[in-house]
Image 1 (spheres, helix red, strand yellow):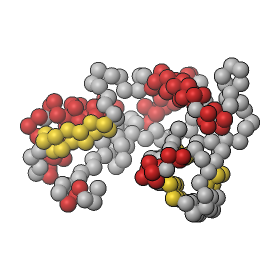
Image 2 (cartoon, rainbow, N blue to C red; image 1 turned 90 degrees about the vertical axis):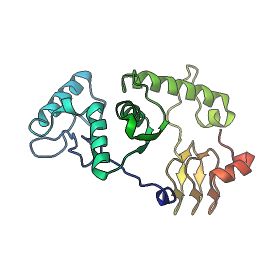
Image 3 (cartoon, rainbow, N blue to C red; image 1 turned 120 degrees about the vertical axis):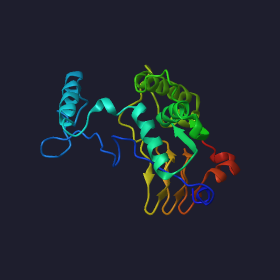
Image 4 (cartoon, rainbow, N blue to C red; image 1 turned 135 degrees about the vertical axis):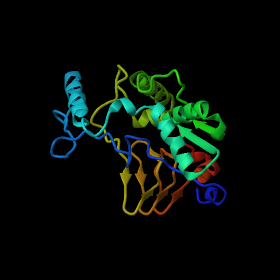
Length: 228
């Protein structure tokens, strides 16, 4: 990012309802977050409906949810652009941000220089409506891939019906002074030795010796440590 800023100005805008842009937080009369009925278990449909009702009531007098949509978000973004005196923007959107970028480009094409989309949310997709089914599909695919991998199948054994066996230690053993960067995935009962460093965006399926460093480059150069 530092090198990019040598050539471009980078602006991060809190979309209305988030961050410091009048966040749509669910709080009670005491100003504290509204609690669910019982945080120790999954809420029922009725409890969720009641929570949503109480949350909406808590917004009265400080926010109108009707005006916290993508349409308002792109208008806000253009207002920021105009206030900064910028003629054209390079838009970068990920996930829902791709929806914002697409709609901004459609509404304000004269002020768009380029658009980069990562993980596109099509405009005809109801964001959130497919989460349950896609999550279930992802779990099914992950389970199938694990069964096909001897190392993964050994660490995550299943019963005759395909369910994970309970009561087996599955969490990694992390010794002292281990550094794990964001995006790293540690699978199964592996040991990360004292002082080891695990780089970002790597998969660890084997023990890591004390003091060792694992990065994407080291995995590429060591076939025996490639992720499964």
